[in-house]
Length: 600
Image 1 (tube, helix red, strand yellow):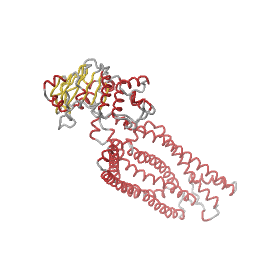
Image 2 (cartoon, helix red, strand yellow):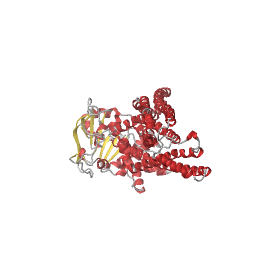
Image 3 (cartoon, rainbow, N blue to C red):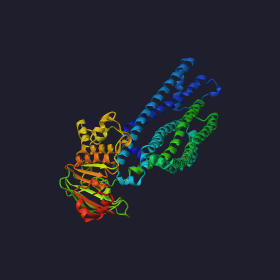
Image 4 (cartoon, rainbow, N blue to C red):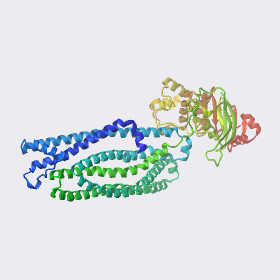
């Protein structure tokens, strides 16, 4: 409840209005029930000995008697007409206030869901990449989808039901006490039995519901992995295997879901049965009080009492249902809170300074890094990258090349040593400023399901058409863009699937050019391209490298022969450094790599 109320707090005024309208709705409902006493008197005047009033002296009895005397003064037929109008007006007001209460709560519910989703998204984009390396992306996505849907249905809806039920029951019980204290105490003695039974039914719901949400997250992950790996599944004729795996997981999810809903659905009929049992008890006990001439409880008031209690049964059922649903929804809250409470280790330092661009050099000072404390990825890296120079990182897979550039981008923080830019530790620079001056072109080009124009201008919404066309030409992309059905306004689909690898890469280069960064990072930008695409992309890279500091991660050594410095990594350590010719003359590890690729 504290989690939900924290998000409801900004909308306290609407919550107060909601409670006010609920109270008015219940008051008019009670007024309608109480007016039944006069309806009975009109049909059966006091001369009918079967319903002679015992002459109760309470204010309620006196008020009802005065209303009856006023209505009957117009004659029985006109009294019935006037009474019908009064009842109609009372019901109309009851429904109007009920509608107004629902409107207020609907606004609060929608805004609470909006605020939580916004915070979840903000958390998702700020979390370090290390989090996603150890968690399924489908599990994260399920927090935005199924968990939020379940939260709204189970928790927010239940809170609404709970408030309405509590307000209704408090007012109804107060009126029941006013009509007859003795009869109401008899009713309240039976309530603990109902609560114990309902509590027993819902006892294990929270744990089962948490398992249900985790199973659902696993299903979402399976679906995502299957769609992303569909080519591999088809190529390896693993469709039947994938189907079996999904069906087994889905069957377990359905079985657990059935158990959860079996318990949730059991609470309503049980509470209904117990409520009817209480009504029968009231009829027996109350009738004996009326026949015995118990002071204050007349026959007409007893009928109103029964109606009032019958009207209280639906809120009582909603109360039990709301409690069981909230226990079920608690699992969603646990998962949402767990995600929102994950600490972000890559954040701005309290005394972070602004960064206006590289003016001197980038320094790796005794840098060490590990994802797992049991295995070092980088060890004692010392390297200077002067402004305007091109430094290439080469080595076998897993040697730590991509990790080094990830550290420069502060996707991770060093676990040992530090990286400095112009003498200032990287951790002391504002993240937004740092990344604003870095452009990245990666092997796995990330494009979005949008137009070519929007992908080039990603992160720079104020870019003009002239700027976009200029950088597209510099990236050798303008020609193929103009051949698209709608030119720059062509939608390229998920991940840019409608384009070739080389075309996607050139759009990525144009995007980096538009930012006009001081520092460029190329992470195997041409390794997956054919010869013709590589040539076009390499020309675009040459345009991009002009007068900029560049760090290039390369497998194709032909692309980095003219680099100012080539650094060779093995098992997280620098084993060689120098120009292409120096390393070839040394005939060490770099020489072996070149020979493997038959470069002259």
